Image 1 (tube, rainbow, N blue to C red):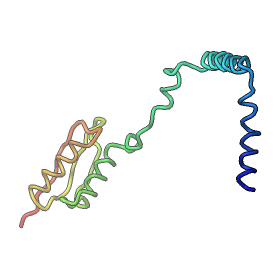
Image 2: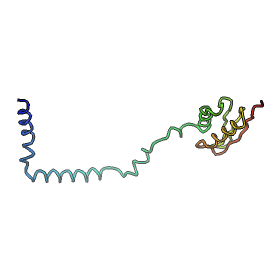
Image 3: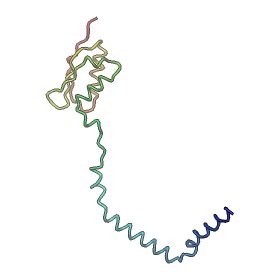
Image 4: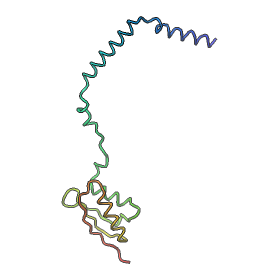
Length: 131
């Protein structure tokens, strides 16, 4: 009984498709083409909307000195807590002040700072701890 009901339902749904006049399909295609042309004409140019939709990188919102501080504090090869990160006189200039445990740690801190996005100059006032 269930199979018969399914066949009857399919026949009811397929009947309009089978007996549709060819003219109806052509009319619908023409209406669709006209609507497509009108919609595209009403839309703004892609270049006009692409600018505001460009993604904003969240890293660009963080000041350069804070980016450096975060990198130094999260780097496992150095003890970033003993290093002060200060802004220089010009934008992008960073001053490192404090104490590094070893010369290698000092060099790593300077290299990390230099490779941080937005840094233009690094002044190192880092001292190496005596052992």
